[in-house]
Length: 233
Image (cartoon, rainbow, N blue to C red; front, side, top):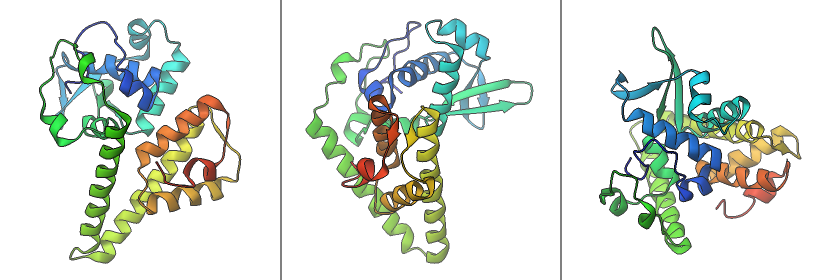
């Protein structure tokens, strides 16, 4: 992932911090750096083995509770996977394919070569119009993909898989709000239904998680109709 720096300092990629939160961006940057030197490979992916005490040494400006909350937040957003392997202890990896979707990287920018020394500041200047266009393009691709699935040889089974995916993503939105300290101002059953309907209508779960995080920064009480009522940005 060339948009993250390969150096021991912990630079903050501003565009990523805006999308997922400051502490989350700091943690994922540090994990990216450590993965460059990790020799732990499981199922074709690189993993970084690390105990909590080690994370505290690497990120001394964050408390244990903050690091734990940050890791839980990243796991809910499916940006980081945490697993315990026999003989390896707790290991972490970055889900780079999800990270690319969060950054709304189009095919042209994905193919562009960025310097590996962390000098990526000049590549972070994306206008709001570009981001909006990229988001629309991604939603259209997602809707088209779902349309292809619904017309497959096994339409009933495909619809069930889509429904299961939406249910999981709806639960992720509710759990994420709790993980970062937010409180829903309505019954969770009503919240779940609102989130489910929005996702079923084509909303993007990553954008919904971003809306929840931004709302939690301003208030503790969240109302789903205000967050996801129109446009599902």
